[in-house]
Image (tube, rainbow, N blue to C red):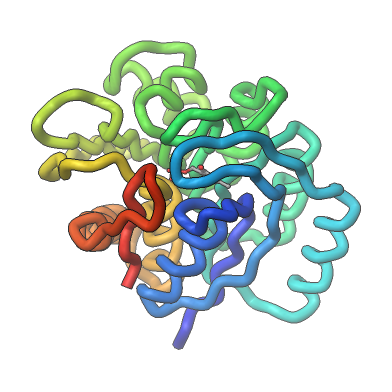
Length: 252
Ligand code: PLP
């Protein structure tokens, strides 16, 4: 069966990140994405220049239409943009009990540029993270969310605060290998990947959507996290450069 994955994320007109990345990754892994678009950004493959968020009343109507029609096997959350949208998503998740949710806590774009004008860390941690099976921050995001420093302290603090799993990615380090750490209530697991040569647009979106799709197929959380990373490594090795800025993973 093709799993239905509900994607709640922003639009990146350059096609590298956001909704484009989510749909492509989910399609590549055999799922079907339906989408609630939290906002439109103004950006290219080099930087973010601005964004405009979607009216919550419109998102509510879209969510009602989808939930009247679809059964979901997993949810992926990316750019949220505001406290009001986070509160809308929390209400929506309460209507989807038992459905695994993957949260990519997008606070800024990889290439630089903010995707929110409000302080979202606390509300994301308190209202969204407890409703999500796993979140996938990079280390700077994990530090912002937890107020701690270093992978171990952040991982432990975020599991304690959310009661859920945390995959902290090491893409922002300068090490030869990228180390990703999964912390859950039952322990810790680590993976290491070759650091590939370029800077990539949409790799975080691609990872979170891949994990959500694999959970939608019924893989365990541990397997979905492991296999999701392997798919992203495969997509990144084929990455291409559509403009003059970052490379884009070839999600096929
Ligand atoms: N979501 C949207 C809408 C974005 O525009 C971006 C970055 O530009 C992201 C998420 C995060 O992208 P990345 O996967 O490169 O961290």
